[in-house]
View 1 (cartoon, rainbow, N blue to C red):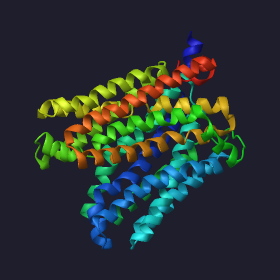
View 2 (spheres, rainbow, N blue to C red; view 1 turned 135 degrees about the vertical axis):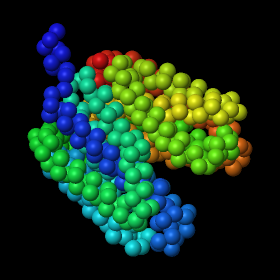
View 3 (tube, helix red, strand yellow; view 1 turned 90 degrees about the vertical axis):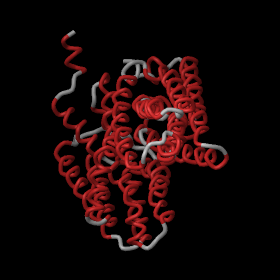
Length: 410
């Protein structure tokens, strides 16, 4: 019994590696999202409209969703240690260009570079964690790495916004550059130097996207995130108009929302460690009930806030399980494309954000804020249905216990 516990526990090097990978996602999340709080300053300084400045956000997400998987498929054949250091260096260069940008076009260019490199770094971080960490710890560690993005929204983005408002928006990107340099220095000493590499062609890796099982699993997180962002995209008018909360309190509530979303990553780790895939169908039903509850709770400030905070707790509950599931499916169908598969969850999340924002915009344009709740709940139910189909296909193909659930059924 003691031997089993020792085998499944984290040693000091693994703990430091987990911290380093989480720091990476924190830095990348700060670099990605901090622009949201500085759009007015950027628009004024570059003499562009606020709508045009907004493309720096949507353009980043689009570049991430399209460029990251393709580049991951191309570079995953190279040794991971020098590859990680090179990518972090390019990330730093991208932020330096952003800090030096004096035109909208140059800033867009730097954001595209940063987005694509960030996507590959996330994929590599997930792959390294899957290779290095003990079986029973993979779920919690991957959830922790994802938590870096959440923590960046709670700490990194507000801090970067304050820096930009007190000085100028360029100073914020010098701040993210510094964070990148710190990550690079730590990674030089902490990243494992010898990690297995599966050499295969880009065509073979992209072939993973032709597999029906992978496509089905890909859209599970897409619809789950879409459900949340159908509502979250319009959280400010919901708070002001629906819950009658004064504008001066909005930032505090959004900070609380971010804090509650950290709990979502803790929940994700627990789900991934305990028969995660089979439980997702129920997780999404709970999510649908919470999202739909806003239809009734919006009549009261207190109950409406409770619904929104519970929504935050559920937003990332599926991340770790889906990440492991996609990577394990890749091991079954395309063993050499595991790194590529590790890039798909963040891509699915970005597509889900875009889908949710689009659905929310349609609902608001043709109805009212109240109807966002049941549309979001419907998206979560679709995610639940896709999870049910995946589980049934696992059972029929008789590899679920040995392969597809490996790492989820601990």
